[in-house]
Image (cartoon, rainbow, N blue to C red; front, side, top):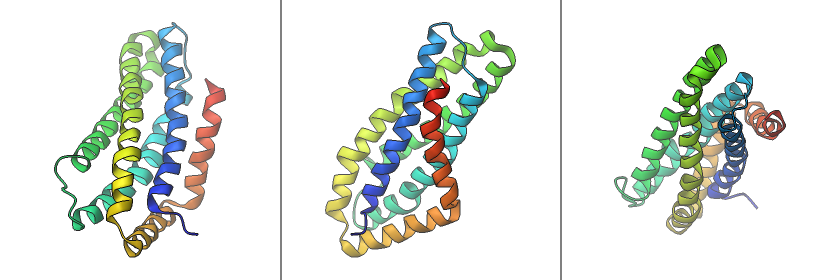
Length: 183
């Protein structure tokens, strides 16, 4: 049986949650006065930009949300506009994490507070965001889309994977697994 697009997105959430857990641990280390590796921050940023945003959010924003809009789901308001806003907030926080991580790697203590703020923002955003998608958006999606729509969306998701590269997707899944021991 072919996976529903929402199943694919939910599996991606599990990978993202692993990296969010790493961010929680990094945040705890920094708040305890311990150092974190700049390389680990860089891996988190790269993961969130490529896997979290380009792959995962790209599927939602470029394919899922427009299809739901065609099916009559309002593009303004709940849940789509709120989720898009949270994607944008996530991009901003990842940019801030990248910049504060680079500053921290150069100057250490002086950039630490901005790095902590960036991590806190992401750690607060993603669990709530994922909950909204899994318990509001995905059940609604599965009620609104028929089998033909589901197949079309699955094909579009597959095209995204091919464009990004299956090896890239797998590499980021591996990075998510490997980050935990680094902290």
